[in-house]
Length: 212
Image (cartoon, rainbow, N blue to C red):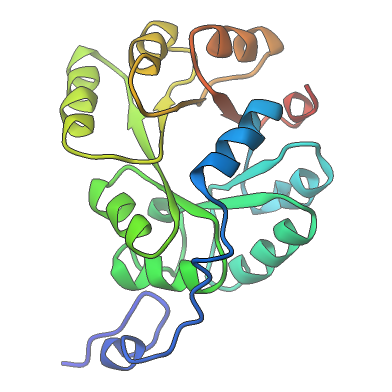
């Protein structure tokens, strides 16, 4: 049986393609950290809000619902606007949640990926991309699972959901991996609280907060 990639190309052919990797030109971790220190609110967007994110002062865009048909042009537009762009691979439509999917995103110039899956974040590093690993701190079991995962993994940054979990943010902000707070952040006060608890940045879909 013929095996296909998440972008509709036969797997054996895709793996033989000469993909124009941009390892020497993509954003480094330190460059990302510098941007987030200057502009700590990340624009987390669905497709419908992408243009608004481009016009905003946010330095970093999280594409939460990217799709195969539009993601390449979105990456070009983001870079033209001087922004870096991360794709949430778990939620992307038409892009494989595997090595081929990561390779495709690297080939079109994405700066990094977001995923809950440790293996995908590791693959991102192999292809010269930054990796943000997303965790859900919904209960004590989830928090301990985070600690166990981070003991054996090294994402560039972690995103803790929900972003109002100040106690959890504070605990993991003491570690070596920078923390992004995401989810349920709807007010300036909640942005400030997350940053005061040690988060490097927050991600939010609230457009008015992108201008803080």
